[in-house]
Length: 57
Image: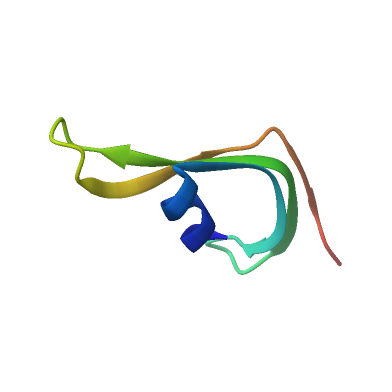
């Protein structure tokens, strides 16, 4: 997923399981991931946003 975002510049509609800092598992939906670039075009990281998630038991 991160490689695809790196190649295309972004991805949308990603879905995956993450683990919180308190070690709770949660599912994220409808995630958008994009590259963060310096003014010269060099990629320095990636950002993400999502509005849909739920804890897993």
